[in-house]
Image (cartoon, rainbow over all chains, first blue to last red; front, side, top):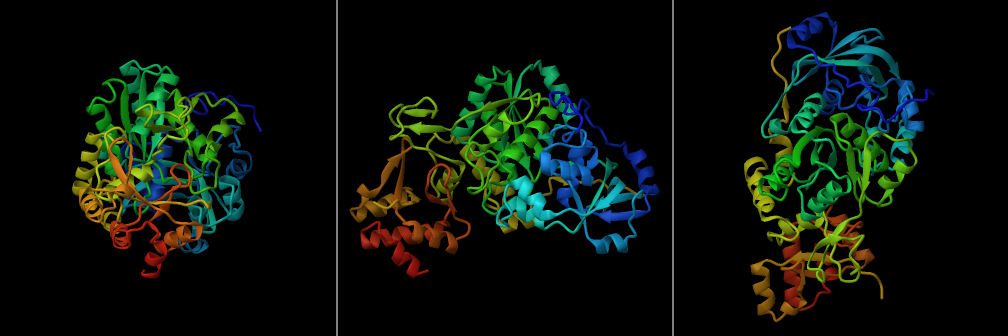
Length: 415
Length: 98
């Protein structure tokens, strides 16, 4: 395997841009002989590839990259990569559509032309091996493993081009910054050091202090909140509440103007713990961040990973060119009378730990959490978001999943 | 003593009134500078039974070691049992009734 410089930014040294002008896209769509509809997860992965979030990936992985990523956490090129990005398909679909290597396949989403896949390889891969290597378990109750096992039996590898860029719908449109745009904005703002905060939660003050602590630790100019918008589970906060409440922290002055920016990343969490932490670091490096904060139980689920597994993995891999800010939790201490850092507060017996789950539980009980652990402006916006976007609830329900406004809409394209 | 895993029932004004009327206000604990909770203990077996019966509930193993996110109606039922029995040890009765 090649000895490469993993510290290059963007990852691999070049920001991938595979977004085509619609007129050119229309021509490309016409050339494709095979049409294949895709689902929302695949569509957002294509966007992440085409806009460069996943640089140096230019398409869906072939068998050698998948094998290398699973076994060695590296692409064939030698660059670190931790999560397989694959396009699964059934044998029947391959036969029915007469798909073969060398084809240009028009991928459609929401009934419209969306992207073109230049098919380089059709292959199989041992899904149990993939699950064990990536997630460290074969247990199907792990959501990432379940997702892997749900893959159809064949995979398509090849470069993709986005030919019909979708519209990002409100309220997400204001927070959509493809890497090229975000890098330009960071430069315009004069930010030299930006620390990323990965989230899929409405912020409580523990999160707020994690961000502020990371800002201090990195001696940063700003915090980039990168909200993961993707597959939801019942009981999660709705995406709209997450994004809007993070911005509310700045609007309400808990972060000074010019030190904080909220953005979205379209991604279905895999809950791969340490491997997902590495993936997050690479993506945020591509977005232009210089540092990434990792707290307790980063991207974990259940008890599959030790609480600080995401900290330990960075000791075993080469420099990724993005600083890791490794932090412990913040708790409420009645002796100190404040939310304080567990690594410094010595009142272990008196401390009162809180979590996103605990805050959700308080809100579900119809109780307003105290301002020391949950900002009143954030609480008000959570309730408002539930009324406006969540069919009366700030938490994901069956109704929200079936009736919510889509995050993206693909424009009509005549071919 | 065996480890217990509380179901935290968060106290709003209505619940506080009921506790006070039943002479049980002392059972509520103050946390986070201004919030009251009623921690109803479960043992390991009871905890697992509760989680099986109510799959949206979550045992927060990482931070608080408590059972959270039980539906509000379920918590209301547990709360009413505490008031009725004047005791926090109501989980067996609760499980038998669901």
